[in-house]
Length: 217
Image (tube, rainbow, N blue to C red; front, side, top):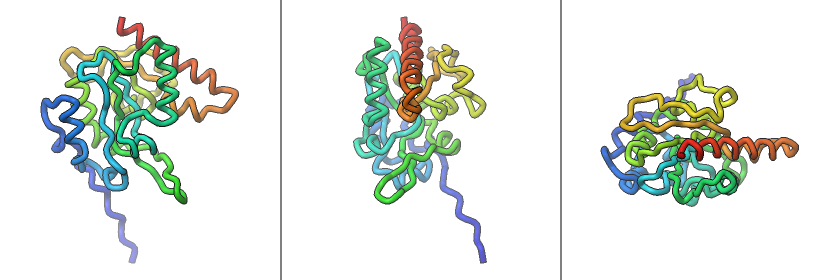
């Protein structure tokens, strides 16, 4: 007899997010989140990092393997490329708040390697209360959405970076003193680009970050 596979438990993070908390309190509460099943295989949840009143927030997709082990966002190869691009764009990462749309690493296992797996829309939706809480307390002026998952987390599944990357856009939901947003490629996409296209992809990322810097005035 064939039985249907059990559906993953994804109640969402709302019940686990402390109301009105600052980033440090949010980071302390995050390990207790059971909003979706990704908490089980992951080493740890990875909270946002940076000043509690940053003018700029950088939002990626999810932690990678190195971020999952370190408990910090953007510390692996993609983070190192992002650091270089920020410097070229005239942005001090130490003055930005860096986070992810999904706080746990989703992966498959191949031998001894953990291979990145893109979060499903349900994972993004379950984790959205954490991102909302971070943005509500940090209150940035500009949010840079790095990659399709981050952009769709904010603007919905129909959003296409190929059509709207580098465009300064109004925030789509109600928020006191809402930021503007800009979507661009994730640094990992630059790393995955073919050798003969990687420099062009990198320069496009730098150009978009310069637009974000200009939006800060």
